[in-house]
Every structure is written in C-alpha cells, then in structure tokens.
Length: 329
Image (tube, rainbow, N blue to C red; front, side, top):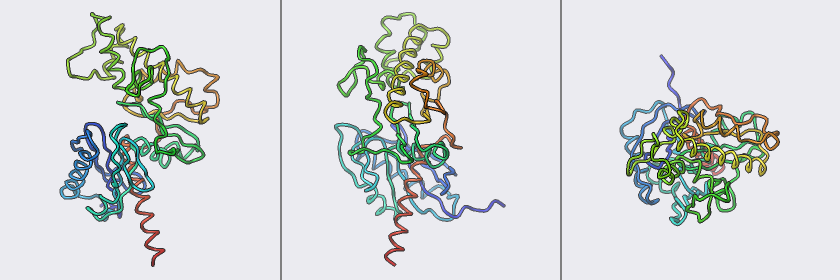
C-alpha cells in the first residue's frame, strides 16, 4: 500500500474565468486539482469566490496528505507578498485587501499570497530552471503577457510590486494597435491571446475571404489563428507574423535589461510550437548571444506552475509562522 504523505498545502490559482484549487506536497508535487467558477470584476467578488471554493474543497474533497498545513493563493494584479495584501486587481480597480489575514481567520491556517506570474516564476525557481540558473526570465504569454525576472536567485518585485508588467512594453512605434495604457504598439496588444484576437477583429474587413471562423461575442483562439496561419490563410499569417515579431522584440529588450542565461516561455500562447518557432526566427543572434539556454520550456514536472508557486508561497507563510512560534517559546 502506498504510504500516505504527511503534510500538504492547499493552493489556489485565480484565473480570469475559473479558480483552480489543488493539494500540493511540500516538495511541489500536485496531488489533486479541482476547478471552480469565478468573478474577477472586482477584488471583493473574486475574494468571495475564492473563499467559497476553498470551503467547498475542504468540505468535499478527500485529502491526500494527513495534515493540511497552509493555504497559498496566486491572483492577478499587484500583491504585497511580504504583508499578504492584494493591492489591486487591475489599474483603476485598487482596493488593498488583507487576504492573508482574512483567509487565516476563516480557515485557521497560515496563508500566503502573490501575483500569479510571480507564483509561476517561484515554481520555476524552486523546481525548474532555478535549479540550474540564478538569472532567468519566466515569460508568460497567455490571455495577457507578463514576466518574472530572476536576478542572482531572487525574484524582482519593484517598489510598488509592479515589476514584470512587460505587456506594456512598446515594440512597434508605428502600430495602429491602441493599448488601454494609452500607448500604441504594446506587445500585449499584438502577441497575447487577447491581442491576437483583437488584431483579427480589427483587420478582418481587409480579408473578406479569411477561413478564420469569427463569431460575434466569441473570442478567436490563438490556437485557431496559428492553425490557419500554418495552412496559409493570409489574415492569420499577418496577425501571427506581427505577433511573433512583437514578442521577439520584447524578449530582446528584456535580455538587454537583466542579462539572463535562460528565457522560460510559458502560458497557452507561449506553449504553441508553431508560434515559438516563428518568434525564434526573429531573434537577433548578437542580442541573444549570452542567453546560453535560449528559449526554453519549463523543467517542472507538472503543467500547473502557478498552482505549485502558490503552494510555495503558502509554505513560506507556514515556515514563517513556525519560526515565530518557536522564537516565542
């Protein structure tokens, strides 16, 4: 009979359309996962759904470990990780929320919280490329684009917990793609899942014979765009080419900033082999000459990097609590 694991962490990964909960071992193995619906219109709505999801999971899912020692949460937006405070879900929606205190009081377990991409970067640092590299960038290309910068073994947070928001890096000064930040040609508007969809919608009038299925109110998936691009559809090829050039430019800009030896590409868009190959074709060898490991895939054993990272944040909160208790004793 398989020996039961002694201790685990309940990890929460808040996404735009769902909450992924999972039990994770102290060494980063995902033992079980379950998804729940969410509402990210406001932090209050998201917090209500997170609380309900945690309660349901604890009440209904059989634990794989004997003891649940902590809760770790990854969310979108700015997070003061050291104090457990969710600062804002997105610009203009600032509502500092003491998530760690709220969750600890409700469930009686130490709680840690961090930004979702920072969580994925932490997972890579602890259980992926971080075992070989002290200077790498975790680049998440999904619905949006953000990055985690690891410099000398530490994740850069910034003075306002806003480091890594490279989606608003301008990569095309002449672009007609207007970003919500007020500038034109931001990489997120050209190469993210949402950005690729927006480009298809914006340009479809120029390509009346496109094979891309465009339905009112429905997002065109990046995978569909890439599929049609590979098959020769002119609109899909144009949008994919623009996106790949934009992402390559952003990568080279980041390389010049922090001098990494590895770029770890993650996220649903970043994981597409066809798109990644195009991106690599646009990388200047002189710029990339010190990136010895190039554009790399994760070394983690599980695809739920954000969940593993959230668990590690919870583990840190538990470890800190134990240290404080031991000191008091």
